[in-house]
Structures are given as C-alpha cells and as structure tokens.
Length: 215
Image (tube, rainbow, N blue to C red; front, side):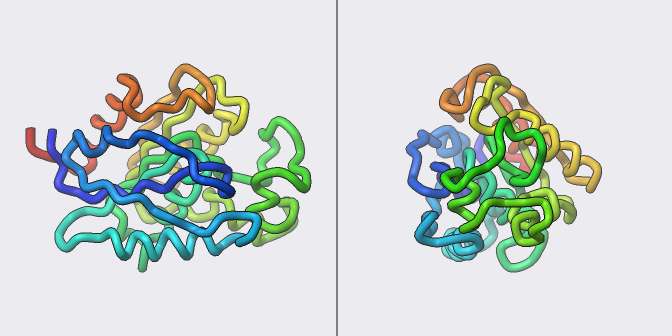
C-alpha cells in the first residue's frame, strides 16, 4: 500500500523533552514524514506548544496531499488538539493517530493527584483542577466534533497514562460522530513501537480505510 500523504509526527516526552521513536513505518506506507518541533515546558507553558505545532503543520503541508498528524504520549495530546481543532480551521486535517494519549488532566482515573512536579503541572504552570476552565480546555475532550477520523492506540498495562484515558477519548469521539478506530495492545508505556506487527497493522488498516491508497 502506498499513501500519497504527509505525516506530521509530534514527539512525546512529557512536554518537557524529546523522545526518540522510530516512525519509519509511515515511510514504508509511502508517506512523506515531517517531524514537528515545539517549545518545551516548564520554560514555556500551554498553549505555546499548540501554537508551535500549528506552525509546523503549515510548513509541512504540500499542495494536493492530505495532512495526517500523529504522536505518542504528550505528542499524541498535541496531535489530537491539532487534528480536532484544525491547523487553520476545523476539518483541515485528514486524520489523527493518537498513541497512548493523555486526554483529560482533571479526570478521576489518574492513579494519583497531580503535584508541583507532574508533567501536566509543568505544562500548565499550575496544578490542574476541575474548577479551572483553562486546565479543562487543555484536555482533548472539550474539542471533539467536526468528524476528523482518529486512531486510538493504548497499552493495556500503561502505568504512566491509564488506558481508561483512551476509553474516555474513544467514547467522546464516537458520541460526536468521529470515525474512530481503537486498539488496546499488550505491554506498558515504554513498550510503544509503531513498527511492531500489531500496531503497524492497526496503522495500515486505519490509513487504508480513511485515505485509500494504491497497492
């Protein structure tokens, strides 16, 4: 399968550093892969990161090619914001692939309350609370709608970001009418590998269904 599309990869790393993930699986599908850079917390707080990935998406777009955005962990959070809210307007992203995404900083399913050293706190510049509208809006769930297709992938034994975050995301996407594919994989947070057979298969099926492509 060959997909004539641009894939913008948004790195993870708790919004504070750059993780290293081999994303050559997308190149093997024929996609042009671009890597987004963004300002890091805690030196830069939200929404600086979203502003930066929007600028990176504008630079990555190629005339006539669909733009797909993808990311792992905190990068998946940014990819979802970009895909659901749009680069310049809702609906201008063809699809989103969200791997192990943190989607709701005020959800009760986190294993322990966030303190001053948590990644969410460093992203926002303050501890997220349910009575803080900006903290709530930094999550993904308030921004569903518009119909962008989304692939949700999460590890069953993820002790960093609970897989229930993926369930909450999928529920919200489906309720809002998004074409949604969900894969719960074996392993933990650090075991993520988009080239692993089960994950690569989910990626190929999703992109084939949503973008088509030549064999």
